[in-house]
Length: 149
Figure 1 (cartoon, rainbow, N blue to C red):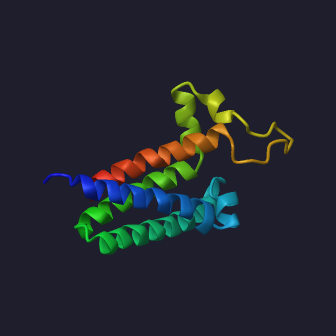
Figure 2: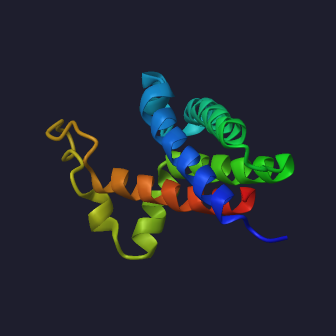
């Protein structure tokens, strides 16, 4: 089976847009604030976010399928969205990406822009952790789009 470049391109764009919408508009404040916390409360918040994220991605891929008339196999869509969901969950639990950054020697970049201990001196999303989180998600969106195509 060969990969259709048009399906890959359209699905990647749809997943990328869905990712932005789900991460920044659909995700609740509670999910964003708790998904990286230890224990079951953090796991539940992250799972709820990943569920709404995956529903958003499914809607976007379905819209592309119908609007553009592209052939998208249901099983490949399921497999691609599963890869996207699992990797999104891993990244959003925060500790795995922090450990990966430490492992490959970029822990200083990961910590870039984070508030200093005991202070709230940088309440922004412009951090190294956020940049690594988003680039990790984008890489896996490309993998998901390849699987789907």
